[in-house]
Image 1: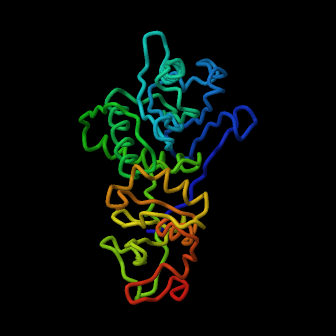
Image 2 (image 1 turned 120 degrees about the vertical axis):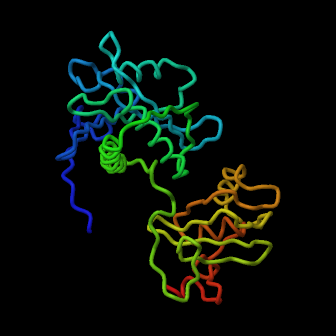
Amino acid sequence: MAAKGKNIHLFLIDGDPNGRIKCTISNWIGAAYKIPRIELDKCNNKEHEQLSQSGVYFLFGISPQTNENAVYIGQAAIRKNGEGILGRLREHKRNPDKNYWTEAVVFTTSNNSFGPSEISYLEDRFTNMALAAKRYAIKNANMSYAKITEEKESELEEFIDYAKIVMRTFGYKVFEPLLESIAPAPPEVSRTKSDRPTFFIKRSGANAKGCLTSKGFVVLSGSVIRKDTVPSCSDYVRKLRKDNKKYIDSNSVLQKDVLFETPSGASAFVLGAPTNGNQEWKTKSGKTLKEVK
């Protein structure tokens, strides 16, 4: 069955697309907020009552230790003082251990229907989804899991489906694996176990494999990249290699999938030299990416 269209409502609270945003979807009980850290003090429980409720939140930023995209996923319950999510975000803003985050995304409900079991389940599911996608460094110290009924699980999984749409609308790909969307390929192109069209580079000490996606070209985990670089290698490629050094073992084997905007960027990374990716990436039968296209 084809996916149906969704009517998404975005309210620019400050009249600024870079400011605070509230998001709702027709026929969804959820309510979501995108709040820049520097705008958090503008929020109050009277003006935005839903922020005083229970819910799940994401703190997005850059890890100071690794310079990676990072996210902390947490939950907040209603407190005796009437504070819920907003109170928890304020605590995080004051916490020196969480200075890395620059923007928060919050999920709650329009009818205040989340209890402890619901937010624990959502926190656990969102965290595991983010871990599986491998887009962000996950800052969570631990997770809590609550047992729920089959009926409640079905209800919350529907909530999650909508939350994924909202998260992407807000511009975050925290739930999207690099290889989620694969570009089509002719029959002669070999494929990985997951039916991905695969291309190879085998020269100059490199033995790499990669595939086209709708977002660019991905060099796959397990690829062997050339250890050194040539003098004409660009500063950009040298920086990419340096930034990904922690994912390259002592045998020059890549330990995770790495996304590049173009096939040439991917081949330059693999070979440590200026290259034409349309010529370098080849099928097992020897056809170049350009020929396949």
